[in-house]
Amino acid sequence: MRYISTRGGIDPISFTEAVMMGLAADGGLLLPDPLPSVDSATLDVWKDLSYPDLALKIMDLFIDDLSNKKLGVLINDAYITFNTPDVTPIVKVGKHYILELFHGPTLAFKDVALQVLGNLFSLFLKESGEKMNILGATSGDTGSAAIYGVRGKDNINIFILHPQGRVSKVQALQMTTVPEKNVFNIALKGTFDDCQAIVKAIFNQLDFKSQYHLGSINSINWARVLAQVVYYVYATLKVKEQTGDEPVNFSVPTGNFGDIFAGYIAKQLIRPNIGRLVLATNENNILTRFVLQGHYAKSKVIHTISPSMDIQVASNFERYLYYLYNQEPERVKQAFMFLDKKDEIIISREERAQVRRDFASASIDQASTITTIRDIYKKTGYILDPHTAVGVAAAERLVADLPKGPTICLATAHPAKFPDAVSKAIGREPERPESLKGIEDRSSRYEVLPAEVDAVKNYIVKHAL
Image (cartoon, rainbow, N blue to C red; front, side, top):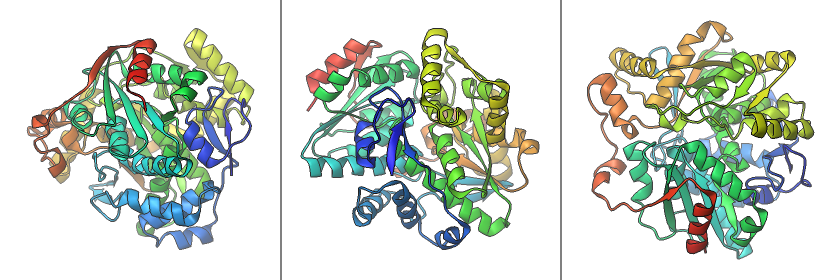
């Protein structure tokens, strides 16, 4: 398996090189070439596997430069940190199937991928004798999950940018109360899009990236997408055992397009078992506007009760555009040059029809999010976090547009991470898991910086390995 750039400017590279490179050297994103697929006989074997064993089978299809034994060890080490052997259990809540992705150490779906990625980094650095300075941006959950994936590990420092005051209090404390000396938190005076743009700008400065051995943990790193493919397959096989032969639909709350793109890859892998993907957004609905209108246009970021989705520039969108453009890297490159100049990408009528075949989409406002949390709780006693509620609300709104068959809603975070929103909906805060109890009493440390590339670079220079 070789990896190529969406912009066509690099020679094919190995999986190990792709993980360590993060963002492609030509500014594009890395993808496997070709995409694998499996037959029904393989799925019959897979349906009885444990989650870690299934992860090994799927990831091994995309990796040919890491032994099956080593890959299996690091996968098992990643998921032993979860509080259930199912890793991502599926529960029936009323008429909904809920895929719970919040059983890892930071109570968010990012743990599923970042525990694996942290172990990959640790293994590759140990074998090469090199050091790495990880640089990432977070809209809420990526930062803490990445930090927990590499905290205390040798040969790694991690620098995480988050938008000051624009993540939940619990999300901020999960990052800034980690005491290990290899962890550096930066509260940026700006939005998540500012954080993400600065990270991408620094990675595009190839001399600086090389000199300071920068690595990426954001979903621009292919290993994160790959690890997330697994739970789509796992959930599909488990639910189809209960419901029969119809394809399974998924409703995915998303802002950065990474989680739903993993679903797109899973669909190619096990077609025709996955039906349609519901792309659920909050008021920051650039992706919904793209699906419905064929127009990808930046707008002002709106601060909402689902802050991990408060994004206007979806970094993984480029990967999907590559396939929409029939794997023509020059078209992708030109599209993003136009986006930089005009703040928009417009696709053809035929391409718009293809997007609508791949995705259904709805934008859910904050009032509807609160109502959904309240209604589900009253009917079932189950508490949704606000991001998951966006996905559930979108699935309900679009039920007539989906193929016959069950729909699985992705629960991307534990509700205790968003006590204010939950309290507004049901009149009380959700019970805190043990890991969050007393978090406000822990010592917190972070650096406040302006939203400027040079300010962040200077901070990295001062603290890099």
